[in-house]
Length: 220
Ligand SMILES: NC(=O)c1ccc[n+]([C@@H]2O[C@H](COP(=O)([O-])OP(=O)(O)OC[C@H]3O[C@@H](n4cnc5c(N)ncnc54)[C@H](OP(=O)(O)O)[C@@H]3O)[C@@H](O)[C@H]2O)c1
Image 1 (cartoon, rainbow, N blue to C red):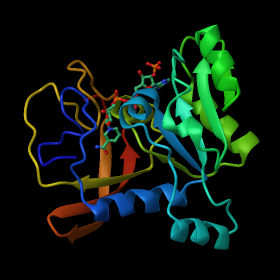
Image 2: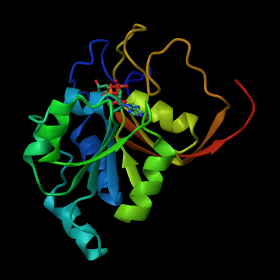
Image 3: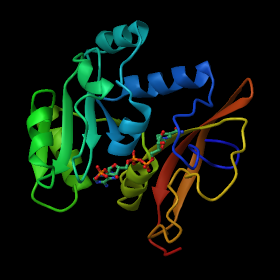
């Protein structure tokens, strides 16, 4: 995020405002997960494949993991374009957690490229999703890459235990650009979240922070 806490611009432009070091940091965190998790909007805006460079794949294999993490997409409405880059790369399985609201034509197109887990509920139940990932896909560690809306949902449910945050040397300004938890003005956490600093590294003009999160019941 920028110095003023923004994770993108107000138009959600695919801005690239962090260094090569930060990209490597992101890949490393991704490589530690059994699964990598992403929200539909981030997938569309950034059009990422969620791959890994060879050295990190080799480290995974040395640890007894498959070379790439399972790729997991979350969407309530399920309108995910099957032409996105992620679906052109078959290096690891893709699982989409969505609902039966996903229109039929999307279901047909996506079934060829991914496993669809569609619930009858209006919204994806994230705790249930994590249970399924653990029980049926052997996932013990999930690396969530956002975006803000998905991160906020996970936080509200107290499902995030660690946070990696890079502060980049920019200020975007304005209230339209989302912060880490988005831009909904009425959003309040149900209780306070205490972030304990576990590590801080300064490389060039960026600050790399690692936090452990603890949750408290008191309302904000
Ligand atoms: N700077 C960074 O490190 C960073 C990191 C990540 C993202 N970003 C940026 O953030 C922007 C996107 O932010 P965002 O908040 O719009 O994105 P997001 O969380 O990636 O996507 C929101 C969409 O994901 C689905 N979703 C989110 N939470 C869900 C839940 N609890 N259950 C079911 N589905 C859920 C919904 O999809 P449906 O609408 O399909 O139902 C929702 O509309 C992009 O511009 C991206 O570049 C920046």
